[in-house]
Image: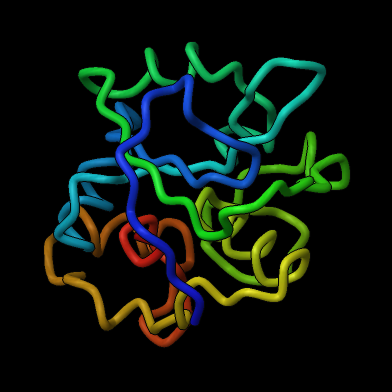
Length: 168
């Protein structure tokens, strides 16, 4: 696995390919926090379109969100970033746009959840596996709300996933 320094960057320092993390205000955010033990519950990857920076993210669908809008949407405007490759990158993102959000957190089904999208791009476009996917049961899934959400979405304890905290 290739690792580079974890950089706290100002939005003016972000480059295409940087991974950004936030504390989401979504309904599933508290469940992700409980399961992973991390406050960082949503992530995306920086892309440049024209001369502007956007976050490619899987939310309701895979979309490009202007960076400032993405930061403002998170809890308290807190953002953490990770630069994996310290050279100019070009993220090929068009094939992902408009794809549905993957509520069941499954790999390889033409829909994506946030950390799967970032993981997939790094693995398939840059040949870097940011982390090893691990079974859902490796997380803290004992809580009633987490169990209920898993049952409702058909998430199995043995299915492998990557969480935003795993990408950090």
